[in-house]
Image 1: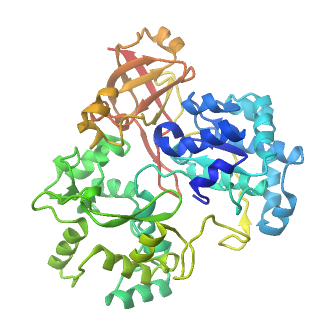
Image 2: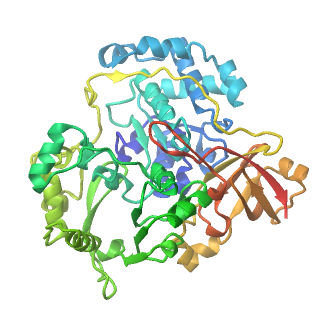
Image 3: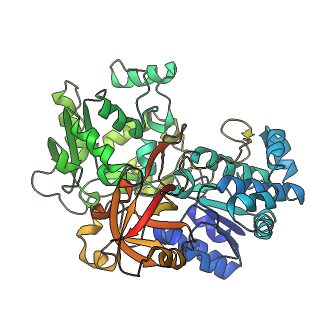
Length: 527
């Protein structure tokens, strides 16, 4: 997030898109609802489903799945047409504005309506609600990113923020809400194939030299494969072994059959986890892991805040903390690692990571957490990014055209499937599936389908239906609801016995390599 969760209560407007906030981030959603209820903040929700947050919104735009860019371009068209752009901000702090203007001029609200199904008059209202606010925050999650053009979706949101000067100030910004605990921290700590800690690129000679000096060894400058490229490489035999920690890709990755084939083609698979997951059952070696309450560490949340995690209980006998397991594996591979504590590892990280250079366990204890960048010991941490200046100098507008999803409905597969979460399950149910209280509230996978579509298909509420795509078929329970529009069905991805990712399209965004989980073509039939 460019900004801070606490700032939400002081925002004058919100544009929430691709985020079922009350389900995926229920605590954070309370800040938005309080701002609306107690301060009169304006709320625009853009989502194909009638999510719970719509009940608190001034305006809901129900777009056809995969048409976000057309809607956003039309909102910007109205902002420029009606004089709502922050011309001073654009002139002083941005570049490539003319190319953006040329594209959005071709997206009047009427054109966007023909593409997306969102009424032109509502697009105009949305532009004014967002564009007239003194401070407006954009919140988004995977409904924006999990497309083959997800990177362009995010760039469009950045265009909108810059166009109105809603960046680099309190209670503004472009704010991705992270989908799992410490996923921000995993990326910050180099859990990506092209960077070390703090997003220092592995192929920059000066970065490589610094890391080699710190670690006393020669390092490769080769950029590795993203996870969505690893599976195809394993199928082809180019990847021989995989080490998985705390992930269950048999359930969470697209095209489940392809994932299983990839694992079966490996020479060696290691899974380190707290439970024997669907993925762990395929492993050659399963290593035990410590859960969050059984280790000392740091987690980094969505707002870039690094916080201490303190061991509350001892792990079961024979289960070391994760870093100790990795250190022992490293030693057996000939690496001379001899760390004594998680704090020592954190101190080493801070010494080679400019964005975290001013952090230490002592400061995190004293401050209750620090937001990066925090480059020096006397730096207070950074509440919001891009204050006065963008990290790259000037903010760059990107001229982006609407493009259709790679897989659209046809006669054989006449419906659009979109996937997401439910409140009472978490990710692949590795944990919540074992918790009786929450599991009783959402024990089975339900297909949300519009009553008009269900009538045509002969589907009754509570009946079992089969959903089929070009990649496979699953069976689940029908739930009739007008939360979804005609021609669209929704399935949560949590359930192994009705895995939505048997169906989803593995096509990738060419830049981020994120799969197109949010749009694929399916058929539905009664069982």
